[in-house]
Length: 132
Image 1 (tube, rainbow, N blue to C red):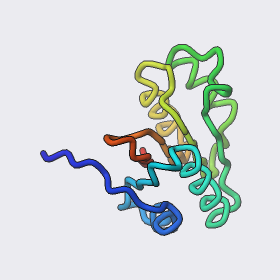
Image 2 (image 1 turned 90 degrees about the horizontal axis):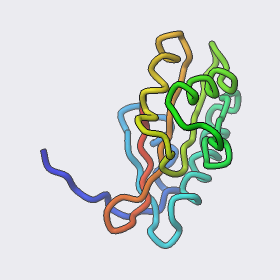
Image 3 (image 1 turned 60 degrees about the vertical axis):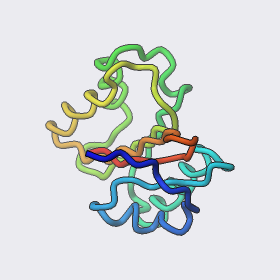
């Protein structure tokens, strides 16, 4: 396997396909702008393409008091809507070990969840990865 740093690019040029095409799993942004503006572009595009999608932003404020994955599952159950499309935007690395495992029990219960995880890749290029 070869690991390659993502190429820096304007997210406004690629966000439409990133949201609509399930085979596109990663999108990069502009280094000078950082992760937050790229995640704002993603949120706006989700609202544009699928306005009925329930959007949940899991930033540090939303995760205050959540320490373990099981606590995150409880939070997600309160905030997500069963039988509707849910977009979970995580604009920064959560301080919860193994947070990714919190989504599988909900998916098994029938929740429709698409996670958009923002982080800085090598050379501080902002990157968003679609999970699940």
